[in-house]
Image (cartoon, rainbow, N blue to C red):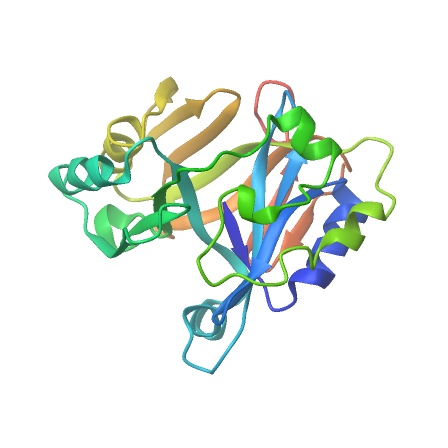
Length: 257
């Protein structure tokens, strides 16, 4: 999941101190700069990306921030074969755009946020490289960032490194749940359980929870399509906001505290 921000370094430092997130990798391109983090440990948690604009006034992230302000920009799913997933997504009735299959370390495409009231961009990608096992990834900086998934024009791939040394809280937060609001819960569920490989773990009237391991996407009915609530365990009891994205403490059963 990627949150669009105006200043990735300042936001990263705030999240490190408040939530204990761990920077893992990142880079700068002509259009954006990002850092991939782990909000959690090797057993429980999710990856959280911060992305800020670079370049001229018409880049996609500058447009996003101008129109919507800081908040969740996209969800990312790494799949075994992005070309096959593109076909499956299109057969499910979704529009796939910006297909880029020319660079094996990171091949990608995007699902339009307007389809079925999705309200958020979904990035699908594959790679011929691998990240280290999570226990190793959170313990040590990858000294050769070209050995893990990356963009073809990335530079300054350790810009975030000093933030790893900042102190965090005694009880770090573990991101476990993403909430997506939509007026087409059934249509959204078909996308995430079909081409994107999730499994339904709970359902009720106008709500479904879909899981990938310990990570949960809760889709519920509502008029404001998109992702705004991110649930975590451990960490501070007061939560934190990044624009429209609200980091909210959960109880063990997944209900907000």
